[in-house]
Amino acid sequence: MSKKDIVIVDYGLGNLFSIQRAIERVGGKSLISYNPEQIRSAEKLILPGVGAFEDGMRGLYEKGLVSTICEFANSGKPVLGICLGMQLLLSFSEEHGLHRGLDLIKGKVVRFKEPIPGGEQYKVPQIGWNSIVLPETLHQWKISGEAGRINCWENSILKDLGNKPFMYFLHSYIVSVDNSEQCLAITRYGLDEYCSVLRRDNIVGCQFHPELSGESGLAILRNFVL
Amino acid sequence: MHSIRVISKLDIKGPNVVKGLCFDGYRVLGVPEKFAEMYYKDGADELFFQDVVASLYQRNNLLEIVKRTAENTFIPLTVAGGIRSIEDVREILRAGADKVAINTAAIENPNLLREASKIFGSQCIVSSIEAKRLDNGKYEAWVDYGRQPTGVDVLNWAKRVVDLGVGEIFLSSVDKDGTGEGFDLDLIYLVASSVPVPVIACSGAGKKDDFVQAVKTGLADAVSAASMFHYKYAEPVDTLNMSYNEKELRMGEQIDSGNIEFIRDGYGDSSEIFVNPASIGEVKELMRDEEIFVRV
Image 1 (cartoon, rainbow over the protein chains, first blue to last red):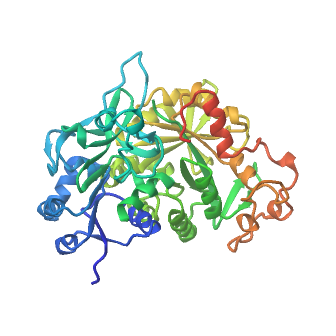
Image 2 (image 1 turned 120 degrees about the vertical axis):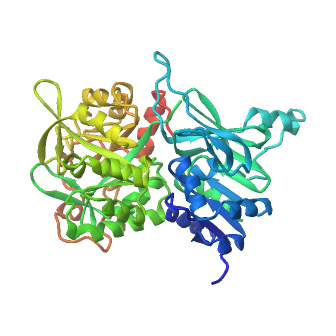
Image 3 (image 1 turned 60 degrees about the vertical axis):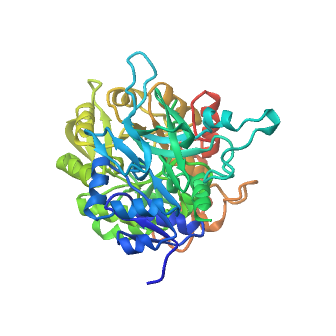
């Protein structure tokens, strides 16, 4: 069994093949696996997932992957969480009760606010395209005068994406990160402004589906692969 | 602020993209994967494949088309037509679809929607509803791709499928489909304003402004069209500035027998087309001008 660069964790949820196809499209090699040894020896890890938080964590526990993934993340090797996979990185979720996550990123998962009668009407889940933007907090941190403004996305998975790129979202729950420095991009939907891309060192999470977000999404995956 | 999706719908019969001719079979327009790729490149937000024959014998054709499409397009793909069981759902998702839309089998056995939503997740399961207007202003659900009435009230059914766990509703009109007369805005509004899940409007788009009306008046969350896009992308090769008018778009290797007069004779007589063809880009441009938030 030759070592593949990227392992896509199969814990029972998510359309793994579309991620694999997209990785291949941008020049990466990936293996879909739930084998701890294969996961441990990967160079990079993708944690996919669609569905409920509770089911996601149960899937990870049942396959005995919780410690493997945490160790991988703590080793400094790149980890990318997608959609539910990103949410599982957090400390806990309020979806259908209170459920503990992997706690690799301090924060929580909460539901979108419901529309107010008489206000802007919108549907939950959010299904569709929305733009991701640089958060003001990061902007201010990096500012050293108008001329010295640095593009905070330059050394990240969001490199070369252009201004306010559109990504494909499909979710009812959003992430709230304790440390705003770990929020790399935000998105506005309904009454919420939430973290759509998070980052802590080697760990990155995308609330949207890069494998379904056209060329912009592929650009993100390319950055992850390279 | 949420963006409105523009979805290209492809009716598929065997290996071909087709368009129904009123009571007169189907006209072959070309190769599905090629059309899908063109739509992807021109900014389609999603793709919707409707298998119009939906017989067990044709299933392999469809799976192959889904697989090839998924390899070259990186936007959501929904597949509808003849999905009758959990195994069907699994097979189509595995081939590369992101969502499946179910109509006939769900009305016969609503529990299929509940089960499928539980196993695969609500985000994968779309309820496809075909509505025919009744004299009293209500709507009746039809099945088998516009062939059979059911006696089921559309609004009641729409609310029921939401309870059963579907993520979205794909709403088409038996009266308007293929006519190019515009959407049934009353129908769209009736459902879209009554359910908490997104509603995709389909059937009847004939000009760009119809998309605007579907959103502003009908409150659709997404708008879908077939003829308007197909006839634009499948225009004769001697039109200027259309780099996507290659022979392979229309003929390819897979065209089987079927009504190919239209493509062979260079798109026939324009009186046979009931729409004003437009590209996806042109439609989105108008929507933007009308202050509808769309992905650019």
